[in-house]
Length: 462
Image (cartoon, rainbow, N blue to C red; front, side, top):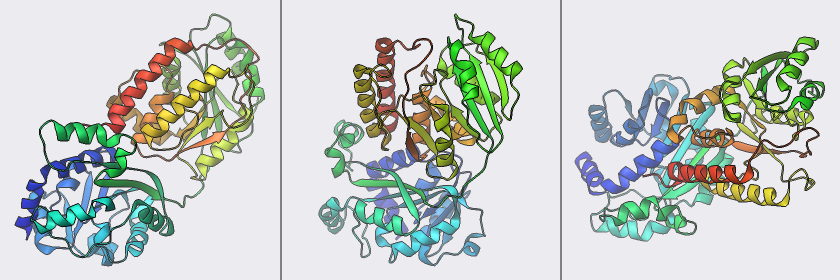
């Protein structure tokens, strides 16, 4: 039987390679990974887990998996009857994978509930299954010996799986389809599966449907806060930023980073920091490099808080609105909080019509690229956990370090980590001092370039 499994895996090599590609995009390396229905263990091994556990119902297959990948912990068990003590009472897993197994489970709801025992509040559940539209073709392939014979299957739609996750304590973060040609046709297959399979409408016909979910119950956390204020030519806003800063009822530090100003911004920062007497902890640094991103990364390295906040020194986003961002993060309603300026009314002097149209264009583009809804990608106010930022920093080489603003760098990284990105509507204000440091046309082309990078790295993966 196992020889048959290996035979069918070789016969359908193109399909299995595509499965590994999408899982390697969705799952960071060196995590604690549990795979339900691991087969011969090849997919689990490809993820390079720091600690990998595979559950396989067939005894012969589980034996072969152990021999092929002796550093993995393979258990011959029925996943529906699995107990922690059966797999050595491990600590909760970072990632749980269910690949092409859900449709043969007798009670999917009970399995999904059971998996919460093996999870912590940051665990990601990655499920992949066959698109139900392919059922007739797959059954024909099975009859003619081109697909491994299957036990009775439940042909689940994405809607079925979303509903089962919802009633079992899980929340869908993002989902998609891959692979429209599962056999190798020279030149055609690679082009179709990489490029065509990700286009609107065509994507719905992909053989593999995948879903990423997290536990929908999160415990509120009280944490120290670091608010980063990058400032270039913002002398008139420095004192107001501190005067208007709300009380977060927790330890809070403000980190100013001055970036090569032509006015007396640095002198104002020094004055405010020296004269301040209050509950906030104030820090100040001069930026050595250029660009907002460089200033923010410097401050993030110096930050002592568990929560990181970016607040632009122009104060077009009100400091008074920041507690809403913090509470959204602390309660687990989101894991990466982005400001949204496009909900409430705003004056054309605060955001001219051309800027509004550009913002809406990039929002639509990024919603498609990241597979999570975004209405305003260019709002400078963003809030996240520092531990997540450190992982984003580690993965920065995947996209390249060329974002002068930092906004897209963080959004790309958050999406790659499968963080839940949510937006907090804010009332966007007209600046009261100075003028914008942004060159809209020049930097618009930079944004387009970053969209192309994201498309290549997050959508059209080779």
